[in-house]
Length: 248
Image (cartoon, rainbow, N blue to C red; front, side, top):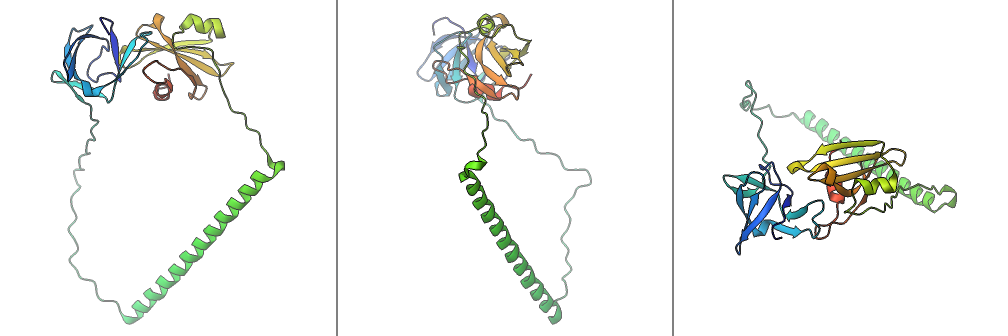
């Protein structure tokens, strides 16, 4: 890594600026310092994942789980469930101590007849449901094998000739000027830039620490579903990142 700055993914909870420098290492930990606050912290090696081989738009060091900065150290981040307090007038109801009178012979016979009647109705309903399901399955497979019932459904596919190193100008050279251009700040001060092409039904997504240095990470359709993604060397594919990106 040398003296190149990098960012953790996912970002460390409790630290606003997600840019670090490597200082030193032991057999179990590495020491890093924050480029903005000069804060130093030890990171256990067991939490470190893969290291991206490309530092554009920024070098990324993967974390195997989400960490939280607390009391000068990094700890696994746990999302706790808060129990709702009880209402003011809510209290435990005491059990009823009265013993019910034993049923008469006539009541027992009526209860037995009612139970048998309910069981018979449930069996009849279950048989009717099974017959309906069987009929639906048979009809479905018959329609699938009938050549007159063939239905052609178009599937949207996008083969964009864009790479992880392409910037705004590369997108404009390929697709022309966008009709929409907006930004969103992500976790750890990452910048997301959205270039809209409504006529083609796609939105190009760029990401980086600085807006003018954002690089291509993929494309979304009009329903905010990924239709194209790119591979980051040593850090997997960007599709998971696009699936988690909030709409803006």
